[in-house]
Amino acid sequence: MKMSAGVEWAVHCCVVLSQADGPVPTARLAELHGVSRTYLAKHLQQLSRAGLVRSTEGRDGGYVLTKAAAEVSLLEIVKAVDGPEPAFRCTEIRQNGPLASPPEACRKACGVARAMAAAEQAWRSSLAGVSVAELAAGVTEDSGPETFVGLREWLAEG
Amino acid sequence: MKMSAGVEWAVHCCVVLSQADGPVPTARLAELHGVSRTYLAKHLQQLSRAGLVRSTEGRDGGYVLTKAAAEVSLLEIVKAVDGPEPAFRCTEIRQNGPLASPPEACRKACGVARAMAAAEQAWRSSLAGVSVAELAAGVTEDSGPETFVGLREWLAEG
DNA sequence: TTAACGTGGATAGTTTCTATCCACGATAGT
DNA sequence: ACTATCGTGGATAGAAACTATCCACGTTAA
Image (cartoon, rainbow over all chains, first blue to last red; front, top):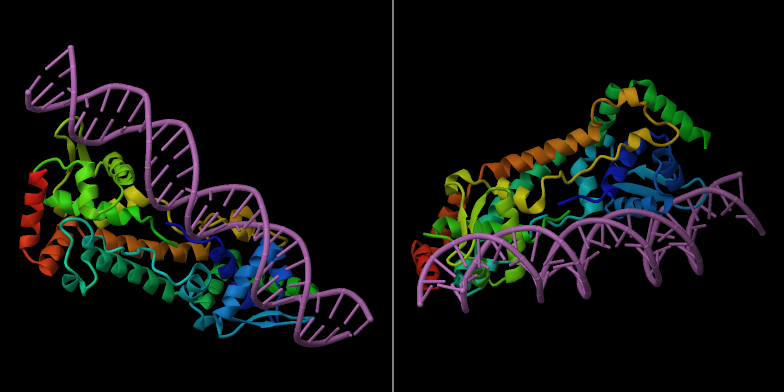
């Protein structure tokens, strides 16, 4: 069970966007993170379609966060890039074979599916409790307050 | 992000094994659940390697649970079949690009990785809290107490 | 007019998942 | 001994998803 690597890129991009003064183009984000420009573009488009970022086309365009960083949760980014489908997909195998449960006994989800859904809900709740603002604060703590100052300068240089 | 479909098969097999009186062969489990016999065999081997089930080779052989059903958690089955690796893999992109964090600032996992790890831990804790015995009890509740009686009869018929 | 920039489609390589088959050794009954 | 049953591991192959690239197009500001 693994998550798309694009999620990591997208999250870091959101943290950067939370510190930017204006639109940041794909090429800048890709160079900053040392990742493929064309592929990152796909992930940013996913964020855009999900409404997490707003794009400005044309010259001096780029991406900005749609909401305040404190209002953007990790869960939203994960869902936007990795998809909203649950990891566990019940195929109702209890309705297969010679001892199949009759359909009328299967109105409720089966116990296995319920347990899996509860676990995924716990996972989502945890992700929902972390905002881009908190992640940005973590960077400041780990790498020092000058980190984002340097970032803003580098973004302005472009 | 999705889990192997084999997890569902393996969990249902464990529930069945918790109700069996003796070793149950792969062919029987596959027929019961209406799934591929040869592919299910692979998943049962994963359970075997993980120590969750014990195999008996030769005639009248098959699989039995190694531990009491109450001692086997959903998490163990998921880890055995789907692998123990975390879904989120940090590639340390903070160490990439022109503004890379210096290695000495990266002794701790980055904030993104920490948040993802916490969410996965919540997921694992939830799965660890569910046992095969509880899942079996759920079946009895949903489908009635005669369900497993019929199952044992069908297994004995073979 | 031009250069910068996001968008969507087409395409292809790589990996993982799903599935099957077979040779092999082990076991219990005949 | 012989045979049918049964798990094991390897080899193999098709399907699906992930990763990545390129291009044509429309938009925008200088």
